[in-house]
Picture (cartoon, rainbow over the protein chains, first blue to last red):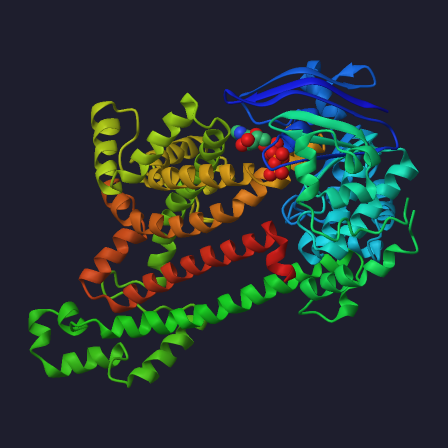
Length: 263
Length: 377
Ligand SMILES: Nc1ncnc2c1ncn2[C@@H]1O[C@H](COP(=O)(O)OP(=O)(O)OP(=O)(O)O)[C@@H](O)[C@H]1O
Ligand SMILES: [Mg+2]
């Protein structure tokens, strides 16, 4: 399933944040979205799910299988959220409810969207935890987020996102808050899920190293616009836009150091 | 896919998880089934109750010591002029009330009495203090309990509404109203309310717990509303509720204002949390997001404030009882303190101490119920 964003403009409280964003994420593809802080990457992701703050105005189209999400009534959009499009946030320390067990957080939307019974939901939750390689998933479901490390929590957040078998996953800097060794594991996991499940992944990241390790396509944003987009090899090796070159030059000398044997 | 290469990266996060989380418990504990997560609650509760019992003993000691530190001679406060002139009568009176023994012995006697439910005789009413308290404590509990219930329901509801409608008219109105509720002194409000609603408008019944012509319902709990309902005397019930509302509202106003403000800021704080946004991104129904993701975390600071506020609400009962002629502990405490009726003062001190203890226990337990991290850690 393809997610197509065209001419997306967003203004929040009168300030124009996005000024006509075009992006396309295909099934089984990882689309990397880079750009400096404040360029509108997160706002783009939130706009797709209709989670922009109150007082935001949007225009343009966000299409999922021919349906325009921007034109959808709130109720139907809520049925798309979590079920067809899921999101993983930057900081796993804060994006899971600290007072609710992992099992509940994995199953509550499953039961709501898919009408799955309590027991079956629990079994599925255990399976999901195994899929994201949480050790002893059978007991992990009854534990609380603070009982896991940051990397494990992000894996749990990914499992939560995958629970209803969505077609599109928006991952907003899913590894920024984690240390480098953990990052690689998370990225590999995302890449693998994308390949196995045919998931369309929009991977927001500051890090061109991350990008070159897992992305199929790369887009670069600046000031609310996509200034460059194309296949990874092309954008990262022969950037056409001056800004992309600046981003590339700001990489540390030894360049992207993530394992690439995956692909 | 890399099922084989991934584990090579795992030791880092894997060990971090174990270290960070189950640090106090041996690693084997992590392998518990669903029931494993229930047990900590029971252990947590048991620990809290044990602490509360110890504190209860401490309270008996404190009330005893404080009462004996009070300057003033209970003998001269209780015997007439003529009797005071006769040393034999004075000595007899002191012996009757155990006042001739050393203090530690007096305390042990006092404790022993407590265990048998014996709080001594009130020198004022010439009745067992226990009977006095049994008469006055339920009146105060009914009043304060109703005020607490009202302030919890209204305070939290107003706070949530204000937070969800932030910066709109209803928010502004509630914020100003809550500020007024906090600023107005309770005794002044009590007088004004009594004057306006009873003397002027005559929409509330007057003083006391029920209409003068009625006789109280048969005592079961001592709470007139409950007892009258239990015995099916609905006219008494209506009268009791009518008499209760005005003083309870007056008493509750400060706490309502306080809880409204704290609930508002607690809810606003939680609304900005990532996990609330994450819950919306999961497409959960609005009420699940509100109750599970917003209200539950917000309850933690609310419980703290509520516990403290109920302490001040209790001290407010003395004034409210005086204005509304509510025959409660406040009035009894005032009378016994001014006449140096030591057994009565001790009894009241004990009851008040125990009530505070129970409030604290409830607060502690609620923490553990609302936030599992409190008991898991
Ligand atoms: N809730 C909001 N209210 C007002 N302005 C906002 C809000 N959220 C974001 N913005 C503005 O939108 C712009 C884009 O923000 P956004 O978070 O999308 O940037 P980003 O590309 O994700 O940056 P970063 O890499 O730091 O995460 C910024 O100028 C920011 O100030
Ligand atoms: Mg961002």
